[in-house]
Image 1 (cartoon, helix red, strand yellow):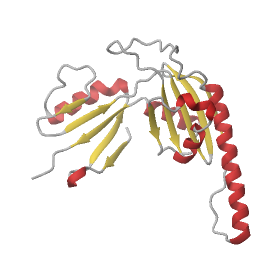
Image 2 (cartoon, rainbow, N blue to C red; image 1 turned 135 degrees about the vertical axis):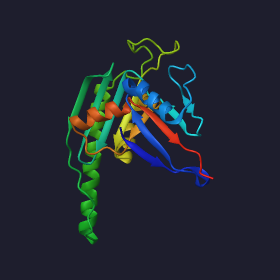
Image 3 (cartoon, helix red, strand yellow; image 1 turned 180 degrees about the horizontal axis):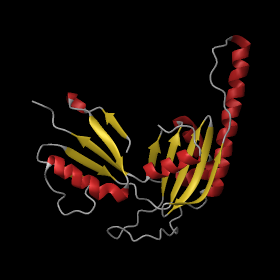
Length: 218
């Protein structure tokens, strides 16, 4: 369960963020209420729980289906299509993009051009795979196969991760224009993509993100 701290305005206690898998959410909420008191108000999918001691939990769901996944770093990439929590299509690969150098002069310029070319080739390769694997993902005719919550189907979503700039370059490809407006969950703390990292991204991308904040001590 990844956990991070985030700053809070006005010098308040830092907020914490946890990621909880959907199947563990009820158990997590039960534990939260045991520790802090209060109740969930009869909601099956609460968006906010405010405990009597002032602790507040904000729940952010990402239960979109199907899901597209685009992960890219200098060391490799992963592109996948997920439906019902299962991989339908995927491609994982490696591409070498050199790191920056401290050399100067002509050597540095030549190195920079080579590095830029390698990055361009990586972006093109990932965009090619995304255009093939994620074709029609954003189509409104895509069937989710799930019973809509509250009568509204969540529809498709996109998980991205790795290097923020490289992901942005991939999504700028005109063939992927339909993906840009999809609900998106970003995981820019992931390592170089491989099969294990891809599976982690799918699990974390589908989790419920919970932001916890506590009252400021007097």
